[in-house]
Amino acid sequence: MEEDLNGEISFSNIDLESPQSRFGEYLDAICPYYMMYGMSYDEFWYSSTDRLEFYWQKHQFDIERRNQELWLQGLYVRAAVANCLDSNKMKYPDKPQRITELTELEQKIENERKIEQLRNVLNEHKARWDEKRKRG
Image (cartoon, rainbow, N blue to C red):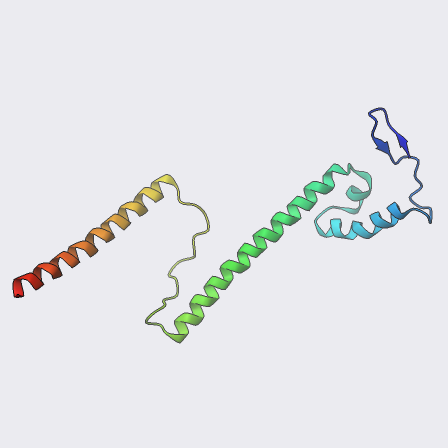
């Protein structure tokens, strides 16, 4: 191995085809994995090695997204089974589960809806309390 002008190690003088080349064997072994991640054969062998990290990161994001999808699917299955077992306690959702954050306007509307619900519950309790006091 020799060093290039920047002091970096250069592999230009390594014969990757030689039987002694463990590095060549390693590259042969990992090439299919990066092809599975979406990298083409030519891109793996002839482009910058900096791209490998980006394909690896994309693959990790794909795994995380798939995990989230399966988790959400599990919520739907749980709701369906619970609804079959006791439809009085658990209702199947009328609309899809929200997976993105609310906008400011949606958050404001949701807060107002919750305040109105709380106000209704408290008014009902007050009405029952007043009714009990009138009776005795």
